Length: 551
Image (tube, rainbow, N blue to C red):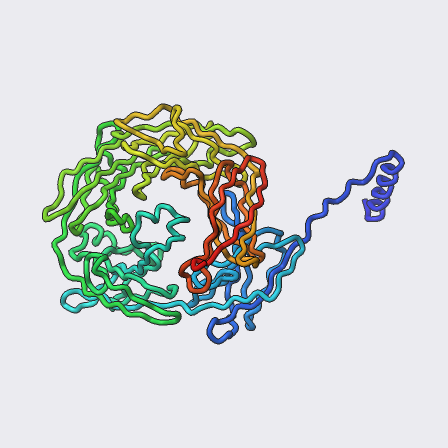
């Protein structure tokens, strides 16, 4: 059939439809896309920064990898990103050797959300990137010889905002900001640091490197022998309370040299017994320092007798943990708190199957959820160590193995946007509010978990003296708030118009507070708390006014 015949057939079909009273189907018209353009320059001299990455990521994401829109700046520092769907985006620029900058960032604040309306073109966006700081140094042994493959990390105290957004940081005194290893000259370089104060820590713990797909033999040797050197903080002390912070300014290079001295280190050895009473030959045993729980020590596999030995451990308090995967859905856990003084700790026995088996069922009230993409977890509110986890089966059932006695936060992860954890009950107990209580290996029975579907939204504006506040942080927290309902707390940033938005918010009562730190990052302007009630399909609008602390 030739082209003319195709055309004739199409005309005849349309004519017959018209005679029969039928109308051709209208082509669906898609909403117009948006574009964003601007420049990336240096903060000090406004010099164009070529090959900077400019990135937009949707503010709210469902499961899976985020959809990223990006561009590279040209020789004049200019960028142009087209074909953007309308929506709210996290928007930032990055360049090697500089600190990432968020859209409309001022001082200590993390910047604003970029809100785009259908067909909108945002022009003349300017990113002014600040030079990153660097900390360098050398690690020697007691004889002045350089030490290679020593881990060196830069540590910072978490900010109040970071602790609010990540509750587990509430139990961590210091968080890792950057890390590296010393080279054959004993030298290290920590780069890409934001200006500020850092505590530098060196530890003789080797991280394996891969060359042409073959692991270095040094890793196996040092993993087996452990270390005879205690971890130290700059300028050479073992306790964080005695450490000195290194202050670095934009583009500045700080220095921190170490001398690692031998100390009496110890060995921890024992065995792991499986649920069948036989030696567990296919599990891993590791140690974590307590109470900080930020730094792990050697991870060892049990041998064919279920035995393990961890050497080169400095005196201190630790959590000894073992894990064994029983299937794709769950894992056996065993742990014990230990104290190391002047002698080796021998004959430690960890038992799988000694804890409580927590079972449950996930039910979806409305819509369709792929339950096998979900997972459940239990976490102690006083520590960051998990009490256990499990994947959810296709039929909605789950089992968390070897949970010790105590109180736990229950969480369900993997839900797509628009779905929320509506309730979780252990018998008559609301564990989203009161936590899961396990005493003497007993619970209230099977945990009943209900997933709901919501279109609820909480939107609003933040102002100061009648003007929109760009980049304010708005947080919502459940009312009443307990140590066990942290998963319902959320935060968002205002956009270039001072507006904020929470979509698919779980129904309930919330306290809403807005804060803005401004340029100096101190004494934020704070709003009066507002209490709002949200139903499953409600769209609430509120106005928040921040007031400087001196008013």
